[in-house]
Image (cartoon, rainbow, N blue to C red; front, side, top):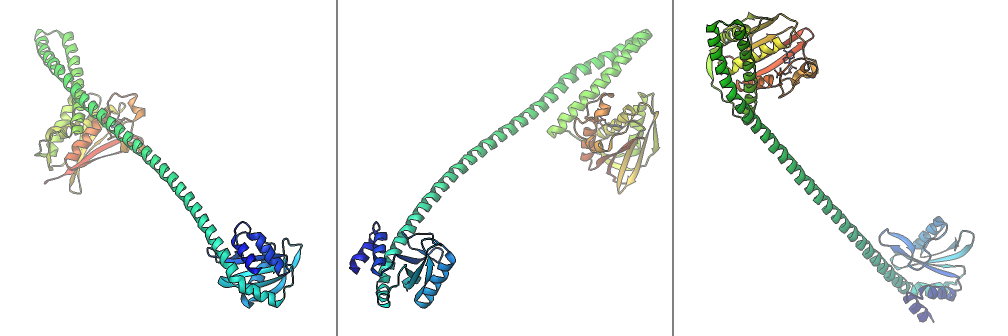
Length: 403
Ligand code: ADP
């Protein structure tokens, strides 16, 4: 009889029926086997038995007492909290417990239960292992599926990123090509413009001489004006050509030692010849030998001076002075003009930058200061500006060889 019941327990399908029969054998209504779950190290109803039991706390202390004493009698709620039943617990191998409910089995029967418990428990442990193996497989399969999905997503992101990078590289290349073309165009356009300008200038000079001999006053005036316009155009073209050269790193310098004092006086008198609105006043001039490209430094001083005149239409003077500052010579041009707002002062040396409020009233391309800053940089120096509502001071500093 007992053997039949145990072999019934080994059949997964009829296991619960066999457990009920075993309970009946001991004169009880239910038999529940608890075995330790290896994952969470806690006693849980073995596979197949009801997994939720009422009043967990009462069960918890009942199972613990059973484990402690080997056998324990009490009452327990089952199958719900309303029905309290008598219960006997027998501890088995591997911290397992068999609970007989709803009966009062005699000690001799309990000894039999104790005897067969190892076989019964091992049957359920096998089942539990099988189930957790199944759970693990399902979990592994799910994880593998998730990992695969994730890998696909990562691959997709990688492809998108790659595409974006390739596109960005292409865009970058397109911009660089465009900039290169623009520089080439500016270079070419400046050259193209310069050739007819040079011949026009030559023709005008010949014409000027011819008319001067014939003493025809009004024609001479027109030719002089045309000459001034051609000079302006030539300056603009030269500036554009300089920007191209700077961009291409092809601005050539011819450094010689020269006295800054002489250079300043020379540029001031040259500029003053063509200016009747402002008096250019050399305030203080020092003797200092510097290593410089004379033509380029003249260009910088000339640019500072012509800006000072252009941007101070209501003033009648511009000051220029040179001083020593920390082993450098500082040349400063001061005007009493429209000034530059503080937040724009750092930007005026940028290529093509013009202060918007002033650019509407004054002609220009926004490249003079950029060229000046580049030239001074190549002299091992730096440029600077300070300005307020009373006017502006532009300066450059370059190293002195001796004074
Ligand atoms: P341009 O005068 O041809 O525009 P620049 O590179 O010489 O180009 O000057 C850049 C900008 O700096 C000018 O457009 C002007 O807004 C401002 N600026 C230059 N010099 C002065 C000055 N002395 N006073 C006021 N603003 C100036």
